[in-house]
Length: 163
Image (cartoon, rainbow, N blue to C red; front, side, top):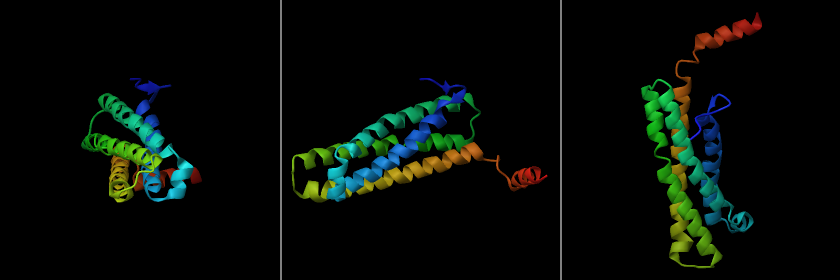
């Protein structure tokens, strides 16, 4: 995999797409599961977003591992990498659920599984996905910014710009 793009590490570039697509897919799957009007309007979009999330997630973790090998590892980076590896375990079920919901709804299948089971499961999986993305993002921000933003440097920057 390409490690850099114009001298910048690929990980932050790919991650920005991932942190938009994965939560959007999670919300779209839940909306499609419960809201008929949204489901009709969105058609296969929740499934497409989930499939894109399924592609972006391993790209994010792979590029993160490449970056991790290029920089000195800290416990914050290790925690971030460990959390990042968990996301695929939420994104795969999200993609499977979105495909199942789309397939059953297109066939006008009814029953407890379609009416209550898959939608309820979609809420659980979407919630887990969103929480995991938030935890990964928080740990990544901590790893990137730890010690770089202190109150004294913020005050110093303010004084420099005033002077």
